[in-house]
Amino acid sequence: MRERIGSGGRLRDIKAITDTALSGLGHEELLAELLARTKEILRADTAAVLLLDRGGKHLIAAAAVGLEEEVAQGVRIPLGAGFAGRIAAERRPVILDRVDPSTVVNPILLDKHIRSLLGVPMVAAGQLMGVMHVGSLTSDRLFTEQDAELLQLAADRAATAVQSIEASAEAVAASALQRSLLPSALPAVPGAELAARFIPGRGHVGGDWYDVFVLPSGELGLVVGDVAGSGLVAAVVMGRMRSALRAYALESSDPSEVLTKLDRKMQHFEPGALATVLYAVLDQSLGCARLSCAGHLPPVIAAPGRPSELAGVHADLMIGVAADEVRQVVDVAISPGVVLAFYTDGLVERRGIPLGDGLSHLTEVVVASPAESVCTAVTGAMLGSERIPDDIALLVFRRLSRATAPGAFA
Image (spheres, rainbow, N blue to C red):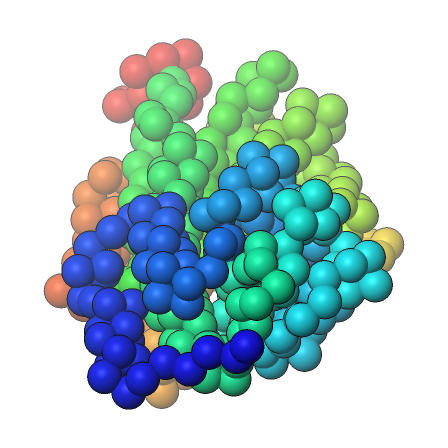
């Protein structure tokens, strides 16, 4: 016997499912409450939500009422397979009046002796988030198209909430990861000053980073890079690149070799990832910097008594573009008092303004003065009170003069 829901009861049911109080709940609590309400309204015996994994290949059980085993056992359903997989692949409701191995692939549904199932896709802003389904243990409870409409309402509510919560959680995780990978303090280097700024973009987290380290040889490594994309994925890729570059830096003092190995590693293990990187190795005297550039913007070099200019580095292809890229090294002489300013493109790129204008402005601002004051002057002149969308990394190195150097280096 197929049951119908009266219009008055349906309106109350819709209000229960879309209750604004649900918006104050967290991810797990919201799904649990929605499932409990939906199960009661539809007079079902089971209710479950399966969310699409990051790779978009499987549905993973995230919440359940009456089917807690699905969540406890980490049930994974391939997209397109069985009942839930079919709903996700076709993005339309499915009603099953017969549950057997020919219609479902999840053995838990069979072990529970579920007789009928109703499932709908969870879609938010055009993005498939997962599947919501309910089930009955009795043969006289057959789901209707009207039931499907109500379940779809609940699924739409859940999909929007899940998307919002996941985006917020991802942003928090990405920001925390990004902060943890930036140097907590710059190393003390005799004969040099170092200063840096990292300014997160407005509304999102990207893959910008800078790094400074002293190598076992006594040489100094300076890195600035920018992973394409944003969010947690970009932050994770950035962390892997940072760690890999440090490891390769221990094996070779040739910056082009380090970037070649980094490129090979990324193309093998992170296909599709793209990044620009500038890596400089300064000798123990700090009098010469060897630079290799993977598609990154050139540093600004400022010498006392001379106009500042962009260093004449050769911009090879960025990381992740082509295999077997032959990378070059450029030597830059660093006399006492010289400043090198490394940065990411968020500092100089603005919509509607030629990149050359931004670079020209930066070279006017960077002067041969203390590293910390250079950072302050650059951020003040280039940003002011503006919060831009992109992350900004700024790293400034200054070689001290003989009169001011605190150590043996000069």
